[in-house]
Length: 535
Image (cartoon, rainbow, N blue to C red; front, side):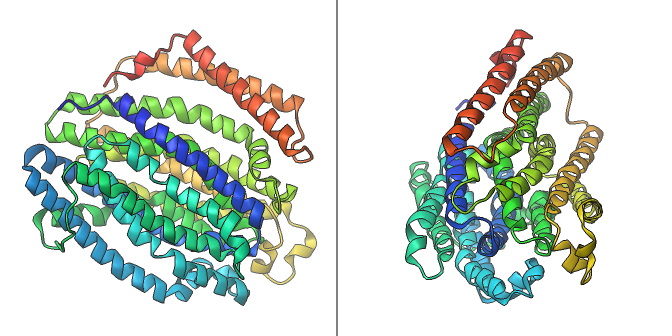
């Protein structure tokens, strides 16, 4: 059976992800309106971030990067029965391990809370609330990891739409939790924890009919010593750092942010969510779509196909991520104000979240390109290189965190802020969380540079013709878009005093004007959709 083109697969995955991300924004709007930005929301985002980090690690990170290439190899070279056994053995082993991890997480919720939010130690109520939320949200890890396994199997069969649509369930559950369940609970924020738990189970059930349709829904079986499961383990373990460096950095940021002004956790989470909109729709989609293709080319020793697929991914990532970065940096305040300035979310919260969004968005091209470059190593089952690059970036991120937070504190503090020691001082100065966002952005470029250098040394990528023409078109279109957005912001400089409808109208006009300008200039300079149909 002929594989669909990468462009068609990307469109399928991105279309469904777009729906999910739109509902994700609606979810964040509902949460902001219902709870604002304070101690309760800080506690929730910490409690959600810990299992979510482990989800990225076990499900979408190292596990998928190890599982999909081996699954693809078995699919291409062995019988359907052997493939079905691999899926069953992998599901049983992953489920068994994560069942133990989940039990330990629920039992040790207080310890995990203290580990990842030590700055809240002097606030017993906040610490206890975080631990209570964590007990409810932690089992999400088990369900969503098995969901990711099912999604990886479907992706190997070029079924990208259903796995991409699945996160819609999480967003719908959280919206229902914030708007319907929260007013009915004594501790309203707990509604979000219960919504996450319910969504984890529903997402898994949503995938099972599709697995049955392709004949791969079997009873999970323990397979720790199964040869192919052992190979997955051997590939997976070294990738734990390399594949999830952004999430590890986010957790480290969480730790530092616990010492900053109350609300910092929420502002950072909202910035990350807005960045995840373009990154999830296109960056993650590119990585998801390109990995099975690269693995197939590697298995069939098609070096030319491997290089062309990788080149396609690089061009597409730049074409999308560079204008998205510029748009997010310039429109940070209009976006945050329009989406979140409702209910208990104030103009001050808008200013703080906009600050971190602008800083974090600077790293968007690197985040997206890493999603394309890293699979080039994992498809060849080279786990060492991404690990080394990831660890170096993580160390750099921690150093940059301290440098930028210290620099911003030196610029913005007042004389009275220094009373009571360093920790007390940084908890009084708003805006320091932007230093954490900027550090993450710069560390992502280091990660990308190290991977790119190793890719050149490996000799598996050969640049295809037309790159200079592609960059000239992209640069011209971006310059025209920036000019239009800057003119619009000069015309409409103030956003927080406006009513909701006026903000929506103005933001829609700016986004439409910038987007149309980018597309018109890009096509005027000679770009055509067929340029992205090389593979």
